[in-house]
Length: 315
Image (cartoon, rainbow, N blue to C red; front, side, top):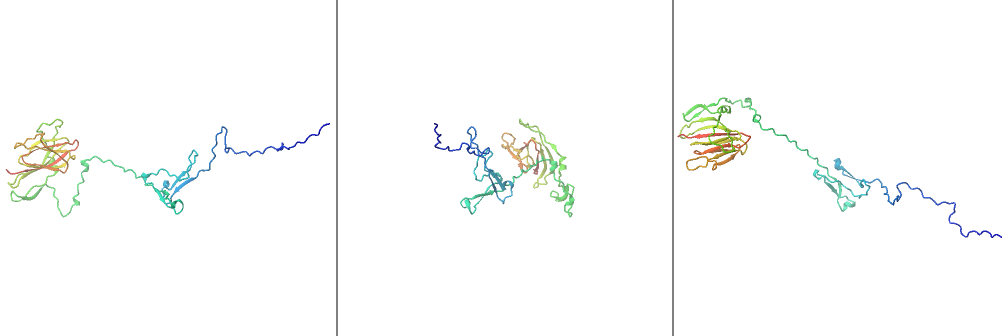
């Protein structure tokens, strides 16, 4: 006889026909892990942007400062406001205020950036033209611009008192530069030149020659001397006369006057012991009676022009 089949004591936990629930597929990029065990960075939301502005300022670059809280690599940044380096040389400065609420009750807060100063343009400098005497001479004044009630003479003579003759008479009282130009004479070379000195001389012109009228009224001679660059007027004595010089034109500090050192009654010009002076335009000097002097223009480009007067006493 066959024994009846025994029923199982326990029923299985799960029905064989039922399959385990499957989890929904995850979208790519959201897995916590990837093959190889490398973690994947979760995507971040669009980074917030802090805008720092102040309506008081109209400078476009100062009005709104935009700074991202994350860089291109995706690294997180602080939420604090960030500012680029201020251009202090253009007067950019932080402006602080104390709001009535929040952190402003304790610390001053940045309200904005001061408006920048405009960079001044570099001044344009014009080259100075070289001095040209012919161009620098002013235009002669017109006679029509002068007072009409006066008469201006073109001649060089006038009626003056003549002390010698004790009466009024006509004499030459004006000497114009054009007339003196015709009397220019080259100065002679009367001494040997030192090594390095050139054999250049100047020219001299005479304007007036007035003889002594009496023992109380001396005579005098006037004129000018022009020394080209590097030119020399050799040593010369003035005898019993006094000679006065006025420096009209020269390179500043380039004109030399040398006065011989006196030795007893015989005065000889010795270069080693001579007293030397450097003069400029507007200066003047004189040579006392019985002395010896020497003139030299040290400039390499500029002429030196002197006006002189010799005072002669009656003997």
